[in-house]
Length: 224
Image 1 (cartoon, rainbow, N blue to C red):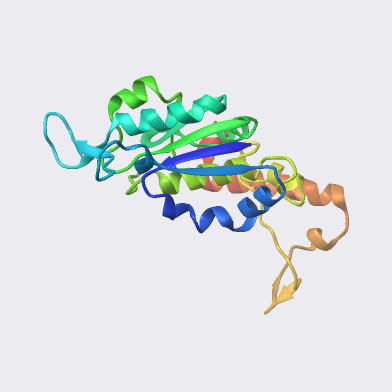
Image 2: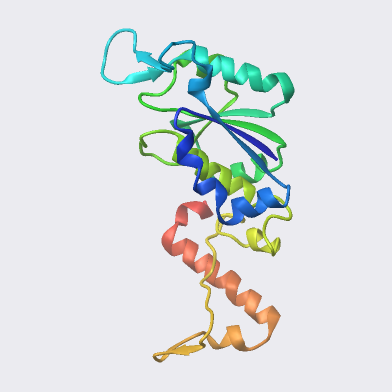
């Protein structure tokens, strides 16, 4: 998978994109991530990429020109299945969306900032809009990191145990069951006997039951 991320704050990606599972996926050659500084595509002598909104109002808006120039340049050498704009009013990110996007080969993630982007970007340049929740961040960079991580971990070969992602919460519209590790008895707090019984079928039955009970209690909406 190739991810091209367009941002006016590229330095925010220096740490998160070079750690843990993301770093491992890059080392294995399974993922390539390219961060593009929007200011590099500005024709303004001060490399300005925002302007005041027509009609007045507080806050600045990312201009269409540098965004269009960057996307056009990227499309010269690569065919992209989706150009995704991270925005609070986009479609809510869920596991099904992550599963679907993880199958794509080339994606552009556009990070909004300030009061967002010129509406014409949304109408003519992007193909999909995604929100990571009903709240507002200072910019789309953190949302892009969340989306990227949710996709990358699903790519075959990224996780040491590929079956791990299949048992995550939301994969089957259920929350994941409780998990335990050693010691089996800590301060009198014991691991359920079934988990150390060695009986795989009964352990799986217990996990399914626990997942269903946990979902009923915490997220009954998932069962509708």
